[in-house]
Image 1: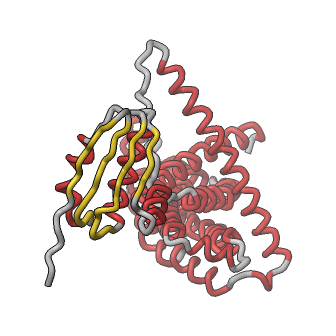
Image 2: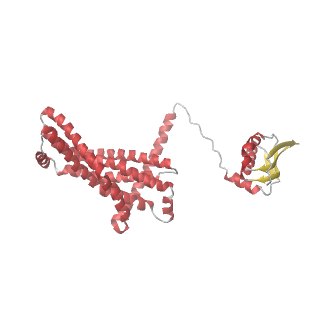
Image 3: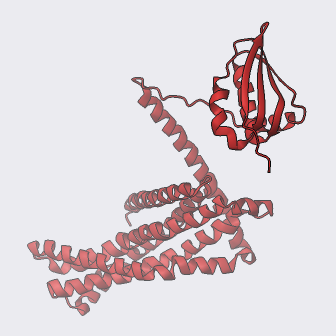
Length: 376
């Protein structure tokens, strides 16, 4: 078995023309040894010939070294020709074409007003994201309207699967949250109202707080953290694995296939979860009122029936579909913004939860102002 001769590089200059002569086996296994000689080869002549006629072996590693040497000399203003390499020119050109160009990184400016430019960039980016989210909302609403008008287009298997994940599997945590909120309201209400001898009004405090605000609001926050993150992670993973691109290639609309069933499941199940939270919130409040204030369950139910109007329950339930739409659209939109890696999936999942909860609270504040203006 023959042993390949190690490559060698010689530079010769004569009458204003330099020749870089390569010999031996210019292979990938010798790259580490040849990088220094290639880097030091810097003839000052305006015409340089790279002579490859003495090479005994050549591969892509050697082609990369030669292409880099040629590019460096040309950048210095030399006229470079490769000679004696008729069999190797095609490989050298292929490697040179495939080598990515290095783009210099712009150093950040540290001027006095750089913070103004930074704010401007963030505003422009935020405005673009807002437009993208509104556009995505429009596509989702169009898809929902289509399946409502033509129910035969509903993907029932997907819808029922998401209803189970979003709704039935979330009942224990929502019920526990509602019960604990009722207990906290009952305990805090008892300790405060006892100072004024108005313990009996703890029923109104618990009923209005739970039915009108806390029940559905905290349910939406839990769903945003639980189901919204799951939507972003699952659809985002499909984006990374190019499954969404495959759907589009097959002529399928990813919004209709992936987004509409998830949002529809939220629209159906969030009001039911909110109702469960209300029931357990009232139960927890009644239990704590009985323990702390001796307001027995019969008195609690009587005052609840006589003093708490149905409108408080309706005000809370009216918010549920809007919260569901916000959570579903934000979660799926964030998933569609995933780019290229699992790290992006994690970042978008975090953004989905944060933005979903923020928008739910902001929407609840707008509803409070709206109902206050209506006198409801």
